[in-house]
Image (tube, rainbow, N blue to C red; front, side, top):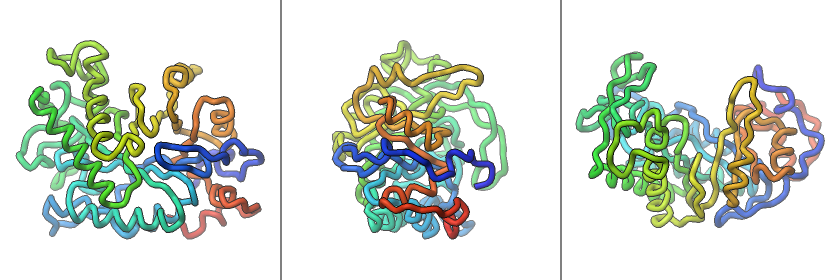
Length: 340
């Protein structure tokens, strides 16, 4: 917890707006503080495991989420890959094998035991993966052949240069959509209350939306904005049809009638960048995250710029006391004692 903003960690003086109930999809939440997805890198990885046995959630993960669950509170669990070739490394969890589903059941059980609601974030990193993660040995898929900067870690090698991705053919895209659908179905099978499709941060959905990456296509999935968002819309629609729109969400989305949209606040140094234009365009449930304090979260909700505020790295230790209407004078270190 070292280095966290003091205002985030301190027990807030007035957060009445954060502790008003709200309907999100089919779920009635008792407060408006959500836990944002965080990559924890705690899934199984052993040399004796086959690729199909890797990326399994562990008991430590069940403890972690159970500690942070609150009655009527929303947790969005960490980014979870939908297929082997969507992995960035072996220590992130997946949701495409029986063993992975079984591992996630312990997590959802721990959250539900405390009365919480938990969604799973569905993830495919696209060009940020590596051919060694693909069962067929193919280069990682993307909207184009534009290579990403930086390094990637494989099953057998340390950081190496990223590969030139292969541009997904039009006829391959239905399979990609189906991978998200099947992962959503398996998430519900594992006990999750819904899913959030990861459509931001440079991963495969964003690789189609972003015109600096999606700059080579001449089919229906490239060109103007309508073409570039087509994949995102089709994934959301297909997942919503499979598990229900009221259990489907996306991080960064065109306006759709789904459970919620989850946005990360813009970080532009020296400039005041607002999410108000999106709020004005989208009338559904909106969750906003990134670097919030108790005071700034309260202001977002009070001013109508967000319906829920999500905390990640600095998940507020005062939440459980406030959510249960308990007054606590405990210090942050005491509140976090024993939590992982």
